[in-house]
Image 1 (cartoon, helix red, strand yellow):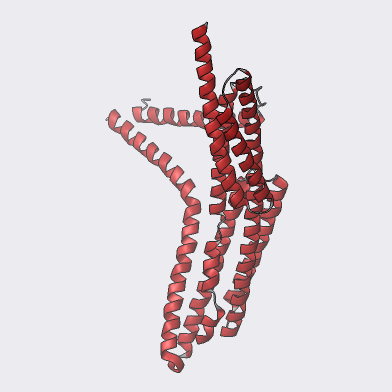
Image 2 (cartoon, chains in turn red, yellow; image 1 turned 45 degrees about the vertical axis):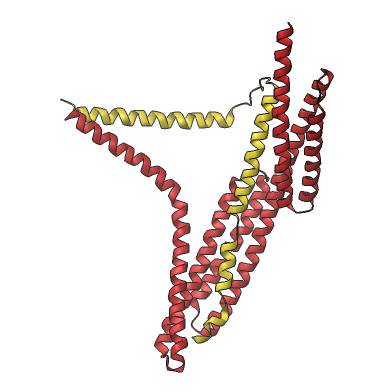
Length: 255
Length: 89
């Protein structure tokens, strides 16, 4: 009896434990998926009605047109909801980023929140539309707002990533300097470091190129070159380690 | 008064979980105010390797940022919102 009760208690606790994690992690995804699904569903419904109205032409009744107007409004409202949900996700991501200052983060989040407010205002306008012309005018505004938001987000991404890559390049340069010291030490100990020096020079050249590209706004190329430099430095670090181990082994043997 | 075994188990589990949470909260607080310890001297090669690993993580994080801040979803909706489609209304 006692055993059975223990098992039940443990099973319930395990279930609650897993559930709490699932709820916490799924919360954001659920909201995102719900807005995406809601939009796609509304879009399909509107498109079906639109095609039906096209087929009927002048024979379409006022009631049918009125129903279709409501569907169109739902579709546009859901599109706005989806964009708002997307912006909220971007805000969450920005708040986690360490490469920009808190002050800058606050400014970026504030800019994005202003866009969310603007979208909410447009949603109210869409819902208040009673005619085709009102809806068309507001949809035009929504579309323009989406274009504006994309531009803002692109600028934010460029700023964050340029800062990110810049910090990475600085770190890699520090590592390169350390490895250079190691190479010099090995050289003074009589080791052949020709290959090491070549790899180091290649890595440093790549880092200079990465910095130039990144400073010019091409952070994608900057990142690619930084990654290549990192690979070279990983190789060099491994080789230096092996050379030092070999030297140590040799010394031990001679002693 | 006789206390059932089940009740005792539940009490023990609740106490353990409670202590666990308290411990976690305490350690979290400690971490925030902890003074950065003086770095222990380590061989350069090892330090460099770990630094290179950190850089790898940084680069991956940059990639994640790019993916998460992607706006293709909004771009696709922009295309869907052509005002002329409402002419049928």
